[in-house]
Length: 84
Image 1 (spheres, rainbow, N blue to C red):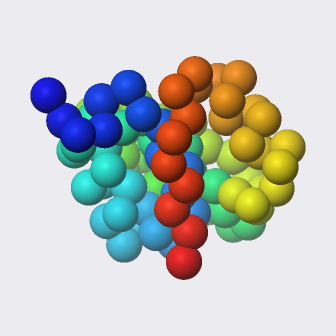
Image 2: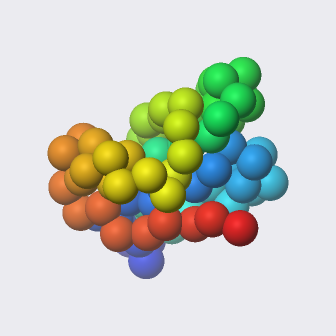
C-alpha cells in the first residue's frame, strides 16, 4: 500500500514531465495534470497512463478555484496540490 492511496494530486504539466507526478503515482495517488500548453498536458497524460497511473488532465491554471471544484467532483479524496 502506498502512502498516498486514495489521494488525488494536482500537478502542472511541467512538474509531471520532471517526474513529480510519477513519484506521486508510485505512492498510490491519482494524478490530475494541469497546464496552459495542451501538448505538454497530453504528453504528460500519455506518459503517466503508460506507467499505469490513474490520470485526468485539463488545460488551465491549477490555482483556479474552479479547477479545485472540478477535481473534487471527479476525484473524491482530493488531497495534494503540487505547484512550483
